[in-house]
Length: 103
Image (tube, rainbow, N blue to C red):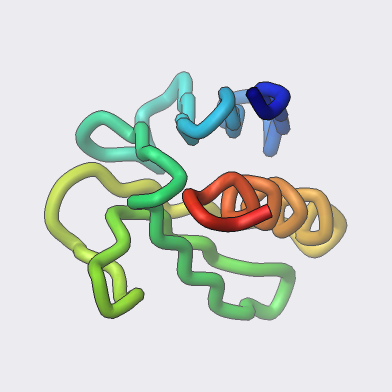
């Protein structure tokens, strides 16, 4: 049985990203960046990252079969400062690596 993956990244004082084995959850104490129940299986998560002047805007939601993202259901929109971009991208790379059929 593969080792259970666990990663936790604190984006700021309110937002925490968690990868617990094959589930990604976004916790926001203010609920400003999340809607619905921000929890996805790694096989179902979609992530879009768009450059901004001072970092990235990342939208997280359900991934459709054609690899586009559904805008129905739970979502999170995170503004990631430039100095935190590498760690946040590495977090989502780790979640992608945990998908079925990937090493």
